[in-house]
Image (cartoon, rainbow, N blue to C red; front, side, top):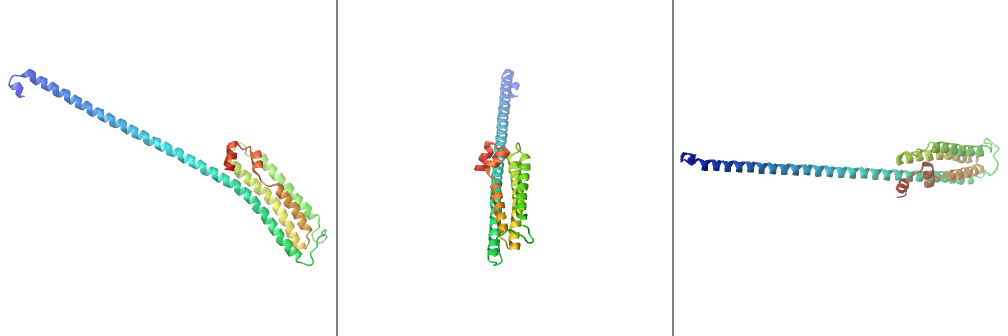
Amino acid sequence: DELRRSGEEPKARLIESIGSIESIESFESIGSIESIESFESIESIESFESIESIESIGSIGSIGSIESILMKNEFKQTILLYWALLAGQIIFALVVVFMTKSNTDAALNWPSGSFPGFIGPVVVLAGLMGARTVNQMNMKNAPENAPFPEKVSHFRKSVIMRSALIEGCNLFMVVLTLLDNNLFWILCFAAGILGFWFFKPTLEEFSENYRLTYQDLQEVQR
């Protein structure tokens, strides 16, 4: 304004143009700073999302490893369950044999009293045939293309069903030994135990009937 009053109009215009240029440059510099900050904020968001994706992948992997451990434990528990049932039958039979032998009236001959002798072989054979039939039906319906946890659960149910049928017949023989004071029934029990041993669950049986993949076998054998 002072330059205009003093008659120096060109200088005044030059100073105004310089001021407008500086304001434009400062505005552009502010805009560039804001763009950099926005870009950095975008990068921080993307890095946060990448961290979340990594954590989600890690959580999925941990869930899968936990599931495989549980399935491996369930298979081992199935094997232990079989051995527990076998041991329980044998211990019960040994106790009954000891009690029977301590009785002076105990005998070892073909029963002819209240319990005919043919009952033993018939009951034991019925138990074995029933277990075989149930096992064949279960293996026929085995989920070969199902996920590994479903295969383990199905195999566990099959082992429990066939073992329970044979065990029931074997325990019936032990009870007859106690009631009849005749060790003949223990011989039938021994035959039933051999049949129970025949249906012992193994990894080979599980792999063959359920068509386990190499990965499934590795999970079980770890």
